Length: 145
Image (cartoon, rainbow, N blue to C red):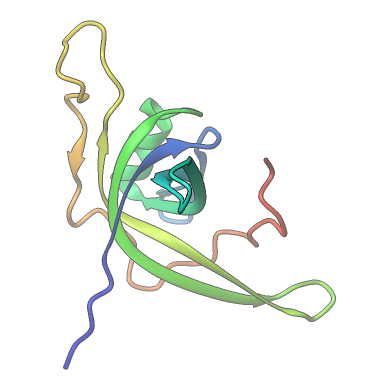
């Protein structure tokens, strides 16, 4: 039996995308995405809980992110979880779980069209992660915010 690894998020960028161009002119973008869930606790008080996710976009989606996304942008991301591991400078094993985006829709309101979606937004099937991506640097020890 095969498993399913799908993630769907709607949230705001915590900072501008960090875009690198790798060998072979392959673009990769990485940014923190905040999702906030609001619910009532047992006493009926509204409580908000924010989760931070590291999103990685490849190729055409990375280029789109570089061109149109910025800190605070509201986006819909669909993708899969990937956990990477590496040894730090002291030889300690580190792990990072990231969302590798396959689809991106920009949800910010546009003042000139009223559609809420940018005309270049949408699915970018076949432009995702290469089969064996090189590592995209060590993730930060802590989130920078």
